[in-house]
Length: 204
Image 1: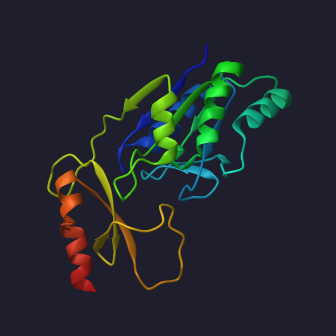
Image 2 (image 1 turned 60 degrees about the vertical axis):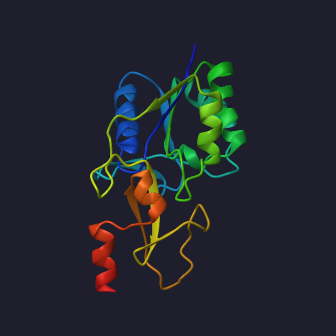
């Protein structure tokens, strides 16, 4: 019987690296697909370490059950799906992943952030927490600038933390430079910047 596994962590906790490693290992003896959404490299899964592999690009209209059935029809088998950036998936898409597991006996490995820059659960991650067979926090612990364990992803505009805006940020041509910084809860709440952000503000 297949399993739906959800692995989560902050930025820089190794989610995409692990997704690539699992796909690499499984693909040696099994038939599977690597999927991602809003990856920095487009239709790829890319790690901050510099490794990148082509992937099925997920969009809101993609149906994972149809994708799996079509792959089975074309290739005779489908043993697994590795799904990166799963926090961006819609509720129906997460439920489709569960259907792929239950109806087609396919293992699904989903990876994603838990919360956005506002400190709120991503809808896709919330649904995965609700229905996944296994939920695992990644053990590669990212750090806040103060040295404490990072629990939040902060969005900065010109070095200043912001708490409102679109969850998926599309470049609107504004002059503000948008960056992200890992923070512990205390510094995420206070908005206090680390040395990198402070240097940016000083340079501006």
